[in-house]
Image (cartoon, rainbow over all chains, first blue to last red; front, top):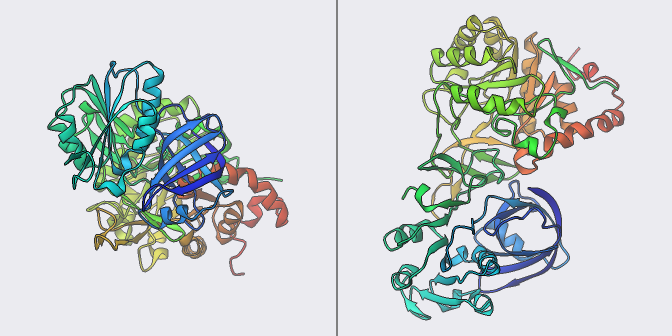
Length: 243
Length: 304
């Protein structure tokens, strides 16, 4: 973990309420895809946890959905705004156990961290496929960015406006893969449990206090005892998660 | 310039103490900075048996503060002694404040007795004020007789200084503090969190799964200053002040109100370096206000 002042380079809407913020600053504390950062916002007491979409030397990309007052505030920040950020939080995905053909499964605002994961897996010479679930065509984001990486992208929409009508599970049923990585809402994970055939990792979400393991605000029960989503997670192996 | 103070006979290099529940068992903060720079810290509230605590969500944002309803999650006193304290010993070389909670007088006595026997422990901070558990915690701290009974039971089985941590969710905190002093307490710490709640407008339900929780952060600082001021004038044992402290100036204000040492809570959760920053800022703040020795200002705002 590191406390870093970042400067916003750009902050643009990808859909009606999903934004991409590109920041410049020291990213050396980020060590794995699936980690997150915590942003201090003026007038707000607690920091806001946001997953890392992508990072490079001195460059950090976050994709966030406006869901409340804090993210509303973030969406209004112009380029040049400086933000106090704790970086390199959480464990991130373990990419060493995936086999050659992992599948990356994202639901809605759970999609962003899978992009950094996809790049990491490709860099290891693996052949990931991506399954993205959205409610409708207007809510789709990042699909083109994944295609630009040269990976196969499957889309499911609840209303059938793009791709498979239904959910990520309707796509997953017909795929073969060596391992899975998932990020999305808990109901999506529960549905996945009925169709997945391999080991995998789920990125869990819980309301956080500190974001770095001090307050126990985000604890969940797992098969290996109580775990802090912010510090022991957010990524947990499938076999540890209770459904 | 002197920042040393004496708390129940043990010298602190400075009066800054991260509060229980915001600092774990310390060693994780030691990855960020040398925690020996602190006066000491109060470790995570420990109970006789392991506890998971309350269901999530346990956290709510508030204006200038937060609500938590963690509910005393901890591994239990046995694991604290066998696992947490040895890990702490590798990075912290000062006496630590052991925070204890319980669900019966016997629980408190048992857990305190176990921790009293640990050489690393300097003080026992007995939490009779947790608002997040039923049938325990705060129920002992809202009646003078019950608080005194816990104090007596703990004192009977321990040798180290016993500091009773009080709840602000009472009509007369002074009478409770005096009852603890009369029962043999060596110090009083206050305030624990204030009972609060938030409601989610979209779901039309409480934000916190446990409905209510403990409100902390800078919003409660004036309440804490007032209660430290009242209690410290009514008792002759040291008072540890806490509640919304987030700067060296807040530490000075708490000490003028009557605190011998000052705990820093919610601020640690927003800025992991908050307590260290306060230690670092203290000499400059003392200079700014013409303070040469912190001991000069303890209770300096009292009448007469």
